[in-house]
Image (tube, rainbow, N blue to C red; front, side):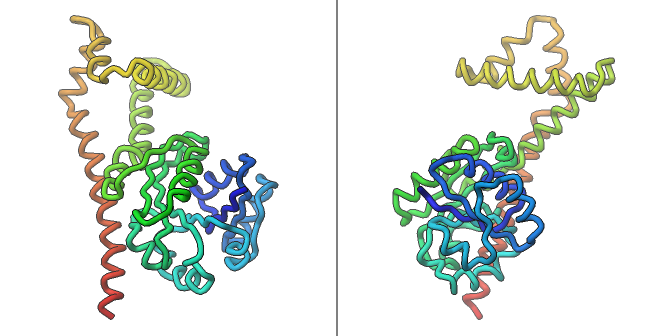
Length: 276
């Protein structure tokens, strides 16, 4: 039985804790400073243990998951240190806070970073995992198993996390925007918006299944659908002429650059503390 404790109960933390609470191999505890949020979560998840302090959460946990916002961490590190952060294993989903900062502040190399996306709410997340080089293999395997409990997971070099945010963490919003745009097109041509959404999401699931099962290049699949002088090539041409590919690539780059900015801010704060 792995005892896992969650510091914070925001959207992502709650989604992960909820997924683990259904697994027999985990004893899940949470501590949320906003009592109403913790109570609301516990009402829906009776197998999860609510803790009344960080100290009690520490006592009840072997692995601790940091789910609070990055801007809160600065004040939290000293508290965690006094409670014995050096003796624990850690998983952090705090965006933009690199392993080097986490390890320095927590006083241990037994640290893993997760970068999930919001589909964790329905056990459909895609999560990137970066493990500190000095972390033990047991933690690495435990982290993978935990991440796979709420979706799929990939080990990834930490310096590629910003790019992963661009193609997954943030990109899930781009997918929703694409679905909306298609539905608005359907609505303009006479299909009611709700029915358009239903048809489009089923179409996307079919497209994904086709690629995953055939393993074909997506360009080959696209051109296969495009009959000569047919309807599809007309639509594809319209996408090209209106800069669809370039716009999507720019969106990925913009999200990636912002993720790098956030990591640089975290590193600069640590550097300034060294100077003082």
